[in-house]
Length: 106
Image (cartoon, rainbow, N blue to C red; front, side):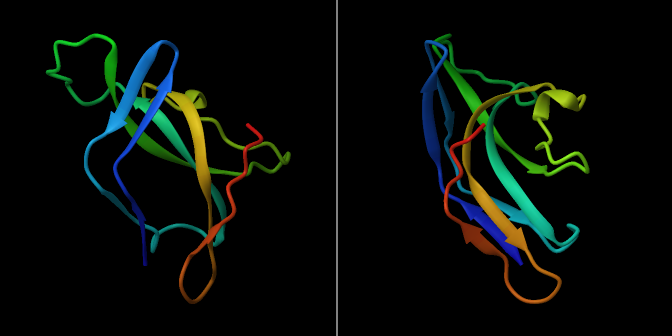
């Protein structure tokens, strides 16, 4: 079971962040739960674009913590910054993952 994320572009912080190719995330190894799909600035990939007003974007799957708060990408040593919540995905014990309505609370 996988989550398919089409190419996207987000304009924020006076920059344009883009993911130029389709992303496919394997959800099979995740614990059953609801996950937020968050667009992040991707500092891991070398961006050869000389236009400094553009940057590469990536995706972070955030799980709700025991205290009820959503995990944030900045809490992990993965060098990224949150840009926008793209949606939520429910990973069930059995069966296919379900894309939930977009949750704009961040």
